[in-house]
Amino acid sequence: MKELAGTGEERIRQAEEELTHIQANMGEPSEMALLARLHWWTVEYGLIGNLDHYKIYGAGLLSSISESVSCMKPDVKKIMYTLDAVNYPYDITQPQPQLFITPDFENLIRVLDKFADSLSYRRGGVFGLRKAIECGLPSTVVYSSGLQVSGIFVGNRKEEILSYIQTKGATALAVNNKELAGHNKTYHKAGFGSPVGKLKDIDLPIEECAISDLANLGIEEGKQAVLHFTSGLDVKGRVENIIQSNDKIILICFTHCEVLDTTTGQVLFEPSWGKYDMAVGEKIVSVFSGAADKEAFEQVPLLPKEMPVSSYSPEKLALHHLYQSVRDIREGNLPVSSVGEIWKQIQTFHADDWLCALEILEILKDRHYDSELQNEIVVYLEHLQVVSPAFSTLINDGLKTLKRISIMPHA
Image 1: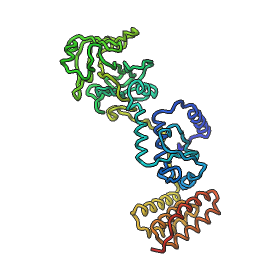
Image 2 (image 1 turned 90 degrees about the vertical axis):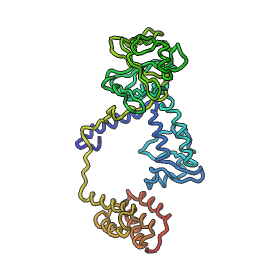
Image 3 (image 1 turned 120 degrees about the vertical axis):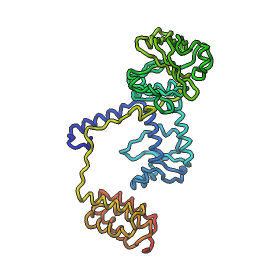
Image 4 (image 1 turned 60 degrees about the vertical axis):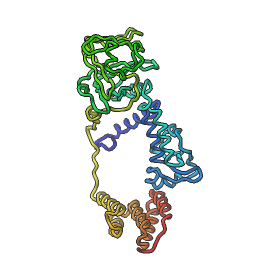
């Protein structure tokens, strides 16, 4: 909002207050929030080694001169990296009070895999469905038959054994992340509900049955059938179609159908509602955010009515061009000899910019090139520390870091 042209100070203040309130009342962190913590304490702010000897590998630390220095201080607590890191939130606006050290990169994989075991997409079942209901956004449940149901899930069933799923609004069915023909969100625009579980009459899960097995149970296309689930749900209706995929039964389509919860007397589907498509599967083996077939489900992100407008002065654009030239030298797209002209431009037109000078100095030291120019830039930066106190600490930390690179004679 601060980036949008014309936003008033009062509106910004209100938005900041709302954000502060939301941050203070977010409740239990989501799976995504916990994963973000692991990302933060490793990819962004990770250390590797042991409690006595460690090195930086996190990109956030490596990209910040000040934090790459301050993180080594003893008042920043160092903790060996385990799954317990998910219990440590972070504030991107403040120095981190603790950092985590992994003994090796293989440990990162072990911790991440252990964390993944706790997530809905691996656990499925009641746990996963509750997560989908809580988030209130399009999610996908995966039956043990392989059928995927994507939509916004609802319900307040308290049972510990999952027996029924229900969505509201547009829902789509898929297999192997590919939408099932005739079962898009337009067809299932009013929602979708279906049992989960086994039949009372047979130990074999429905998805594992052959067509002949179902016939022996009285479940045949063109005939009336009654399915009694072990959970107490009854499905009664005329079987119109039995759909298979990968040698498993995934869907049984009924007309004139009623779905009744015999334990409560609640009618979950009535014949007057139309055709009933019953998902098949003994269990929900996975639950994950978003649709199975994202392209077909048309998950288009909402865009703001106004986009941030960036307006740079000719002077600032010229400085950006110099930074790009420094990057081109670093990546080998320009010769190192080009630094001389870049340095002249910095001195002449951007004398208060310290970072580009520091980057040039880093390249010169790394390439062991032009020791005289190196010394000239060091003197320039030391002078800038005096005339621009606001940048003094940043410049000092940068120079300390570069002192590790020996100054060599002119190449």
